Amino acid sequence: MRYVIATLLCLVSASDAHATDAIWEALRTPGSVVVLRHSYAPGGFDPPTAKLDDCSTQRNLDDSGRAQARRVGEAFRQHAIAVGTILSSPRCRCLDTARLAFGEPQAWDMLQGALNDEMRRQQQLVAIRQRIAEQVSGSPLVLVTHGSVVADLTGLDVRMGAFVVLRRTAERRHAVVGELFVE
Figure 1 (tube, one colour):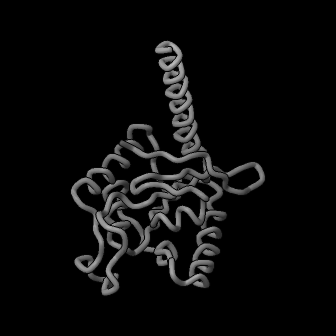
Figure 2 (spheres, helix red, strand yellow; figure 1 turned 90 degrees about the horizontal axis):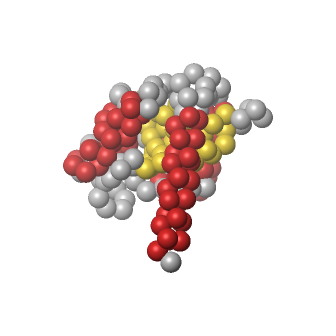
């Protein structure tokens, strides 16, 4: 029985390693896209009084979140992946994640999410999908955003600090290759 369990664990580890390799390889494909959920920020949502121009009123990264963002950037460097344009939700936890991982981002309101406003949410998704569709060549486009936006775009519910990679297909669309969480 122990042999069977050990064998199964090895197969799962080999399968995970192969999937991880495929994700890093996809990032070398021109026109790929990274959709990164911001790193760890304690709590659930910003308080109702939060202001975009005042980080002290928002939910922010803690020390582990900042370290996590640095590890994401380091993983990209270790795999020799240089990113292209970096777009981020204007929320401080997203901007900080982008800066710590990749460099200076451009704040883009469309990545902010709109949980309680379905019309705005749909408008944002249309704009984000359009921007993804425009990514036809070059280094990966990085979108740093929130869990709800990642889920709406990819169908995946990822934890804070995880990212989803999209590869441009022969049909000129972007398809999910997989998700990674850098430990």
